[in-house]
Image 1 (tube, rainbow, N blue to C red):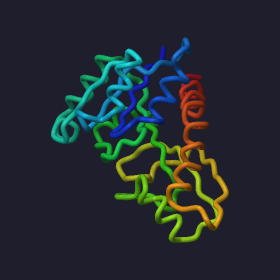
Image 2: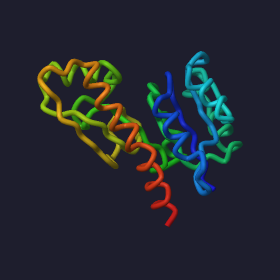
Image 3: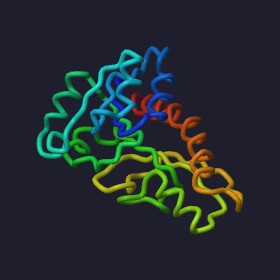
Image 4: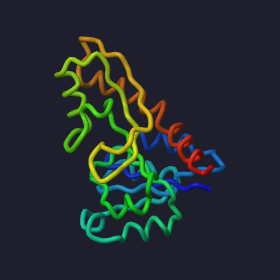
Amino acid sequence: MHRIAIFASGTGSNARKIIEYFKNKTDITVSLVLSNKANAPVLDMARDHGIDTLTLTRKEFYETEHLLAQLHQHAIDFIVLAGFLWLVPSYLVRAYPQKIVNIHPALLPKYGGKGMYGHWVHEAVKAAAEPESGMTIHFVNEAYDEGAIIFQSSCRLDPEDDPETIAKKVLRLEHEHFAPVIEQLILKQER
């Protein structure tokens, strides 16, 4: 059984889709949801699904390896960032090589990097009058949005689309593709 930990900072719409996708799978399960915010709605959603939760302070996340002990306690072998806004520390990247993935609400390498998340991405896409946007699933390394790209999906943008409309189009793609890509990746690495 492969055990996933989801790291999220907000409401967790992608986390919810992932949890629902793996709910009845026999070979992969979501075992832990971690947040850097004690009041993040994603934690309540995870508890409602019977999933253990963990909240870490910045100090615990960056200055100690307390997190590794927690992940090992839950037998986590794959980590998914789903709207998690902190840069992953190098000790964690080393402990889970090619086993940490992130989703980004744009077609990387465009519109990535520090500070490029949520509405900031969609506002930048709109300001550049891009004809398309989309989402990117990528491996995590020690830099924001620079890990190897695993999967991308795009959507056409209309001139009248505002950042909120762009966000909805991209979120549909995220919800459609994130969980199946995670599953394919885990099963492929198993071989």
